Image 1 (cartoon, one colour):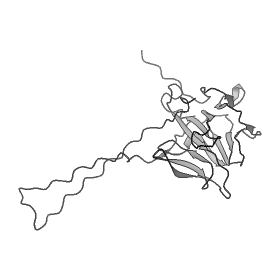
Image 2 (tube, one colour; image 1 turned 180 degrees about the vertical axis):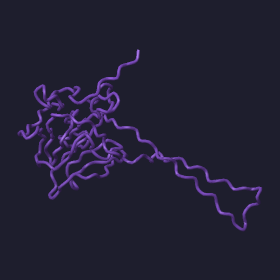
Image 3 (cartoon, one colour; image 1 turned 45 degrees about the horizontal axis):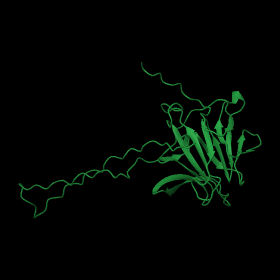
Image 4 (cartoon, one colour; image 1 turned 120 degrees about the vertical axis):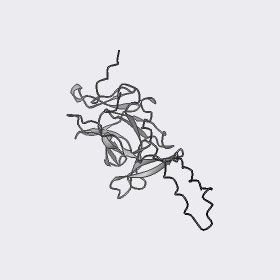
Length: 235
């Protein structure tokens, strides 16, 4: 399970180094022409300097795939395939047994669905009760293990969707909306009645033509989605 749900975000590209400091203006006590001043040494780019966070890739549309939503704890998270989700108690917050990890693949990434983590992104969900008066999920900075990342949080104290490093929004993964204030997770397909998440099971996207858009399994498996055909290996 850990391999399938391992975090995978693109490496950030450092910004160009800042411009060199301008040479000092001459003064009445300037050195003789033979003694020229040296330009300030070029400043190295700070390791903290990274390109601004960007949304997750747009993904690819899937005709005929109904709306699949994780609902509960003030969240309605509508997911686009391919996705998997697992309940991983206490992984993000001690004492919170309802923590979820949702995996989603950018099917336009080279090798997605064929080579381990290619195109794979994970969002950790830390559930909390719906704050009174909260109306939307907004981006906030979250510090964890000495690093600052972005989370989508409902109000000041509600459920958080913790995005991968360097990511600012859900992009093609789905849409987070205010949902029912239940104290357990459910799955809703289209307008059907939400079903409770089975214990010790993982959620997988699947082909509606084969009986339904989602299924549960105890093991991580390749979910259904609009995967690109593998690129033939040159002989």
